[in-house]
Image 1 (cartoon, rainbow, N blue to C red):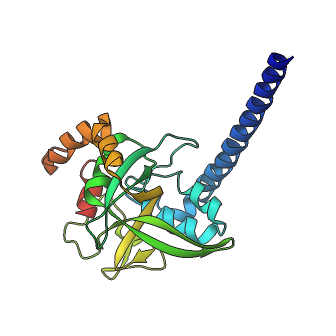
Image 2 (cartoon, rainbow, N blue to C red):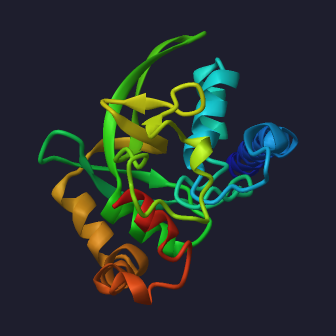
Image 3 (spheres, rainbow, N blue to C red):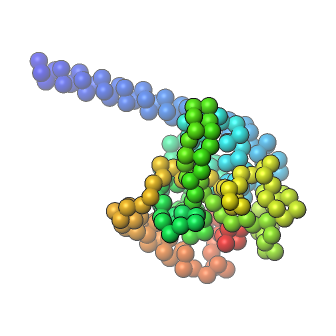
Length: 233
């Protein structure tokens, strides 16, 4: 009898897990389809290269519930501007906190592994506070320096998406402390020693990123190549 009851309990919990997982995927699929539908509004010329800032700003304006806002921010790559399929597996990374010597660890959703390396080297993070329908929330955003005055602004990136008269266009992108917000670092926290060991030991964030980030800029070809790097450095 006890064994039978345990089996029934297991099946009951398994059914709840399956229903919850399917519901979560269905919600993410809905958000993904909404982004696809909104693509012409976000990118009128269809050029999404390095345009994570356009996605972030669009999502911040459209999704007023914080939980929805977080989920939709998992569906694009902040480095490349590519869409990411629902329930993709993120990488655990660290970035330097803007204005301090602290490292912040969290999860980054990417389209390909080189974007992880470029993000860790050329972006920073900062905690921001925003008001949503379900309250005031704090979270860490991904930042790069203001690129609008760059003489070598990447030709493959639509400068008009970010800039107006060589200044950040705050109607089209979100800005904090004169830095350009390109996306969100999920479940972020200040790194512990064990967090950093985990990142250094990982095949991508450890070995492969070390190799990529030592490679001369004119030899980088994979991922977004030198496009995002030239935008962010």
